[in-house]
Length: 115
Image (cartoon, rainbow, N blue to C red; front, side):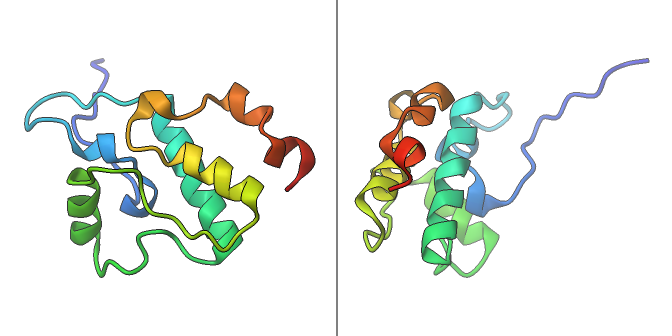
Protein backbone atom coordinates (compact mmCIF):
# COMPACT_ATOMS: atom_id res chain seq x y z
CA UNK A 1 0.00 0.00 0.00
CA UNK A 2 1.33 3.45 -0.93
CA UNK A 3 1.04 6.25 1.60
CA UNK A 4 -0.66 9.37 0.27
CA UNK A 5 1.20 12.66 0.56
CA UNK A 6 -0.67 15.90 0.62
CA UNK A 7 0.75 18.40 -1.86
CA UNK A 8 -1.53 21.23 -0.85
CA UNK A 9 -2.38 22.51 2.58
CA UNK A 10 -5.83 22.25 4.07
CA UNK A 11 -7.28 24.45 6.75
CA UNK A 12 -9.02 27.69 7.57
CA UNK A 13 -7.23 30.72 6.10
CA UNK A 14 -8.07 32.79 9.20
CA UNK A 15 -5.69 30.59 11.23
CA UNK A 16 -3.08 29.79 8.58
CA UNK A 17 0.34 31.39 8.68
CA UNK A 18 1.72 33.51 5.83
CA UNK A 19 4.43 30.97 4.98
CA UNK A 20 1.75 28.39 4.22
CA UNK A 21 0.79 30.53 1.22
CA UNK A 22 4.22 31.61 0.01
CA UNK A 23 5.57 28.33 -1.37
CA UNK A 24 6.35 28.48 -5.11
CA UNK A 25 3.88 26.74 -7.39
CA UNK A 26 4.48 22.96 -7.61
CA UNK A 27 6.93 23.08 -4.68
CA UNK A 28 6.35 21.18 -1.48
CA UNK A 29 5.28 23.59 1.25
CA UNK A 30 7.91 24.37 3.89
CA UNK A 31 6.41 25.12 7.25
CA UNK A 32 6.45 23.51 10.65
CA UNK A 33 5.53 24.04 14.27
CA UNK A 34 6.06 27.81 13.96
CA UNK A 35 2.87 27.83 11.86
CA UNK A 36 1.11 26.38 14.90
CA UNK A 37 2.50 29.24 16.99
CA UNK A 38 0.94 31.66 14.47
CA UNK A 39 -2.42 29.90 14.84
CA UNK A 40 -2.12 30.15 18.62
CA UNK A 41 -1.63 33.91 18.24
CA UNK A 42 -4.80 34.08 16.14
CA UNK A 43 -6.68 32.13 18.83
CA UNK A 44 -5.41 34.47 21.56
CA UNK A 45 -6.58 37.43 19.50
CA UNK A 46 -9.99 35.89 18.94
CA UNK A 47 -10.44 34.94 22.60
CA UNK A 48 -9.47 38.36 23.93
CA UNK A 49 -11.11 40.62 21.33
CA UNK A 50 -14.02 38.52 20.09
CA UNK A 51 -12.89 38.52 16.46
CA UNK A 52 -10.10 37.20 14.24
CA UNK A 53 -7.56 39.66 12.81
CA UNK A 54 -8.69 39.00 9.21
CA UNK A 55 -12.43 39.34 9.95
CA UNK A 56 -12.79 42.37 7.67
CA UNK A 57 -11.70 40.44 4.57
CA UNK A 58 -14.78 39.11 2.82
CA UNK A 59 -13.77 35.66 1.64
CA UNK A 60 -11.06 33.02 1.85
CA UNK A 61 -9.48 34.11 -1.44
CA UNK A 62 -8.96 37.65 -0.06
CA UNK A 63 -7.52 36.24 3.17
CA UNK A 64 -5.06 33.98 1.34
CA UNK A 65 -4.05 36.82 -0.98
CA UNK A 66 -3.50 39.11 2.01
CA UNK A 67 -1.37 36.54 3.85
CA UNK A 68 0.62 35.65 0.74
CA UNK A 69 1.51 39.31 0.21
CA UNK A 70 1.98 40.32 3.84
CA UNK A 71 5.21 42.33 4.18
CA UNK A 72 5.17 43.26 7.89
CA UNK A 73 3.96 41.73 11.13
CA UNK A 74 0.20 41.29 11.25
CA UNK A 75 -1.54 44.36 12.73
CA UNK A 76 -3.41 43.36 15.88
CA UNK A 77 -5.83 45.00 18.28
CA UNK A 78 -4.09 46.89 21.08
CA UNK A 79 -7.19 47.10 23.29
CA UNK A 80 -6.14 44.13 25.42
CA UNK A 81 -3.89 43.74 28.45
CA UNK A 82 -0.22 44.41 27.80
CA UNK A 83 0.70 40.80 28.60
CA UNK A 84 -1.67 39.23 26.09
CA UNK A 85 -0.78 41.88 23.52
CA UNK A 86 2.90 41.00 23.85
CA UNK A 87 2.21 37.26 23.58
CA UNK A 88 0.03 37.78 20.48
CA UNK A 89 2.57 40.12 18.91
CA UNK A 90 5.32 37.55 19.37
CA UNK A 91 3.19 34.71 17.96
CA UNK A 92 2.11 36.76 14.95
CA UNK A 93 5.53 37.76 13.68
CA UNK A 94 5.74 37.56 9.90
CA UNK A 95 9.03 35.66 9.91
CA UNK A 96 8.68 32.27 11.61
CA UNK A 97 12.21 32.33 13.02
CA UNK A 98 11.21 35.30 15.21
CA UNK A 99 8.17 33.56 16.68
CA UNK A 100 8.63 31.97 20.08
CA UNK A 101 8.71 28.26 20.69
CA UNK A 102 6.05 26.62 22.84
CA UNK A 103 8.67 26.35 25.58
CA UNK A 104 9.31 30.10 25.48
CA UNK A 105 5.59 30.84 25.55
CA UNK A 106 5.17 28.60 28.57
CA UNK A 107 7.45 31.00 30.46
CA UNK A 108 5.81 34.21 29.14
CA UNK A 109 4.43 36.49 31.87
CA UNK A 110 0.93 36.25 30.38
CA UNK A 111 0.96 32.46 30.78
CA UNK A 112 2.72 32.45 34.16
CA UNK A 113 0.86 35.38 35.76
CA UNK A 114 -2.31 35.58 33.67
CA UNK A 115 -1.92 39.22 32.63
